[in-house]
View: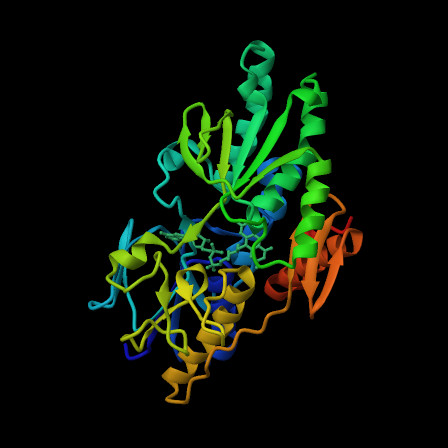
Length: 396
Ligand code: FAD
């Protein structure tokens, strides 16, 4: 048929927003839209540090995609993308092939280990519902194991690599979770050690220094030991070795220290920087009029020429704009340039504690924690309306 085929790869923040916007803007029979995702659910990546530590249930972090899109308008394909063939305009799935006229790549990022030996083998990462289940079970299991062999104190040592956004948020939840686990497994809380190791000279790079200090103070009081400005040299089956030569024995190592673009993108032949593509002002891959790349796989620069960090916030705005641009292109209209509107940043520090910088103002403590909930619920409202907020929202 002559109806253009639009294929969206990935139903994360960028992909869902793009799909919803397309279903809203396109007229009947104006285009065929297919959304491909590995799972039949969407997950709130920004929330995964909680179920990973065990402070919240996994069901609050996921929602079936069929609840978010109109399947009369969008074809949902549950499959894994294996290859993107840009010249043939085809996508190879694990169980079939799709051809496209327009492609929106929103596959999300992958952990970056910077070639640090052992990290890929021995560290766990927070990146999906499946990985979160592993971390959660692993943590609990270490307490159970410790009770059967108390000579292994490394069972009660936890290393989190990276004190960026997700590292700090996870470490905070872990610190909140430990007292409950100690109680459940009859373990003396003094035997448990949480280390947060960061190579950069400061935790939470990009945050206001006063808020960073507040965050580290809150987390130190919760029992976290920071090692800032110290790189992890190697991960081993027994823990980590730091650049200083110091060894930390730990049965649990969680790596949050870096994110890179999806490997399928460089395999497709796009020019990348750490797996991410510097897209044009309309969010297209350079040299391809019909291929848009958004979210953690795209690289967009601010007016000062520095790349924006990959966030859910920018992925969502890109999802909406690239959908509009696809529609404009189909209709022969002019496309719009992407301009990022920064709404602020909130980092959770565990129950009742957070830091936030919104509209040039700084917030900390309880009020910032309320802001975090507002941000979460605002997102649920955007993608699923009031019903989703009521089912997944955490009001208390
Ligand atoms: P994703 O949301 O990662 O979605 C990608 C989708 O593609 C997934 O559904 C995945 O299953 C699917 N997929 C991947 N590969 C394949 C394949 N081969 N075949 C089929 N499907 C595939 N950002 C913020 O703005 N605020 C925060 O507070 C915040 N907190 C965070 C906390 C943590 C613990 C983490 C890990 C990240 C956080 N982020 C936060 C970053 C944010 O989650 C990402 O920037 C955002 O998810 C990127 O959106 P995306 O659409 O590019 O990809």
